Length: 347
Ligand code: SAH
Ligand code: SF4
Image 1 (tube, protein in one colour):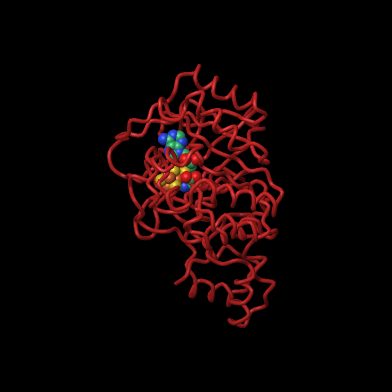
Image 2 (spheres, helix red, strand yellow):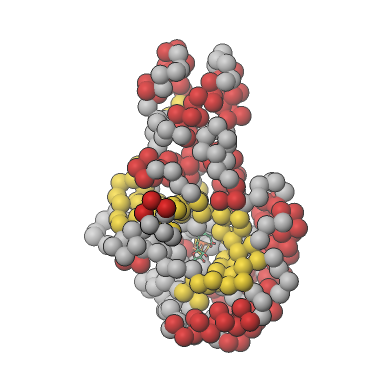
């Protein structure tokens, strides 16, 4: 049986029609699922009994299960271990931003694959290799499982485990569902896709007419260094990647974010900063500097505060809008690059 969370409302309309039910029922189903986070069909009291029975008989209504939640003592960041039907696990991270509790914005970092085939040197997920793609429903399910407990989420970032553009169709469909006005009704501007740089898929995404935020994991401003850090650069070198990013900006008029992990003695020198500024000159963009998070088994280290500040200062002096991304959930390995599946032990 297919997961009900796999369907856009349009698809649900056709299914209802085929089953002999009026299409407007899809709105009611969407409201139960996506505004009340209810997946027990018998609670859907505005649906007739025969439709409820049909829905139960034909579709799977489970949400992925959050089997463990770790909360950071530092900043409240919560990391969920989510179990999928085949007992594979993924991680989903809830972060809080700004202001007092009542005013805080919630950002959910969702996974798009179990593991990742790209193998960037500094990334714990990459060390696992690819187990499989997530379905649309498994991507959405992360959002529903967390919203059910923590309330409405403000921003979604596809920055958890996996490379979203290698699971293009399911990721795109999940965005169509998340932005549906009868359901979660998310503004696409509050959705960020982070990619290691698949040039053809970035071009394809530019054509979808979804004004979402695109973030590019750049990490190096020359091909030699980027080949070593982000292996997919050998397939899509900087010229191709930046060509695709320009195309995206032209099509969407959206400012693009370049993510740059700053790793001690690897890509953090003054020369690297100048090279980066020159590469991004003229782009409608901002740069997020991510001081490298430790990943066991790698020699990647965070630079000291002074070299981070110097690096940022050089970019800013060249007119590049730059911020240092604040680290979240450091004590629970909840930060960028640290996600990996594990169910055993007390780590
Ligand atoms: N696959 C996508 C999205 C998931 S990775 C991508 O690569 O963009 C999310 C972000 O975490 C990326 O910017 C990635 O480069 C960064 N990241 C990976 N390992 C990291 C580490 N050890 N320290 C800091 N950031 C890291
Ligand atoms: Fe995959 Fe992104 Fe990790 Fe690279 S940084 S291995 S693309 S998840």
